[in-house]
Length: 112
Length: 112
Image (cartoon, rainbow over the protein chains, first blue to last red):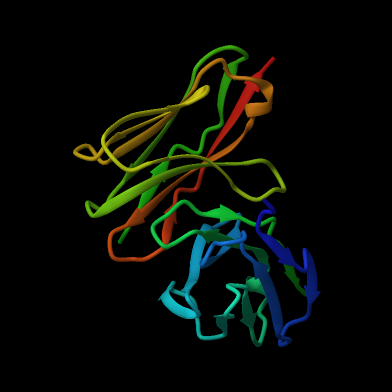
């Protein structure tokens, strides 16, 4: 069974731009969560989607948004990029909420 | 504030020894507990999940949970150099959907 896939794997953007990251969960998994990982803050929860609905959102500004499609694929968008948004963005899928989460390889975003 | 704490290490053990990794959490409504392994430059990989008090064994790994003491640990028996990685403790809380709270991780080095 294929794992979680994320595209693109690497991104370089400049301040003020926006970016869209994509995540395809494991087949059959309906819950997708997004995390930001930085050396200073570790893994921080961004938001969670289940059945196309955002169920939970972490403590991030409104520039961070996401959505989930009917096939459970998810996208996250960051608008008006700031230098501090440079991080590894990880997507994790689970069969249903409260279940084990499996991470994708991540998207490494660098903001210049 | 929900906190998950781990000793950052580094923890060094000789090959073949038992490595013991510890994690404490502050929120008493924590209901699910996970250990992830993360190699440098890679995404977290799920090792174990544990939901009830006691021990859970999977191969060389044993997770131990004590909810009264708000403590979860991971034992790695017969440690191998390939076990050298950062180990992340994650906690899921009742009522927060699929939001996991992560510790900052313990760096483990297994010395051949």
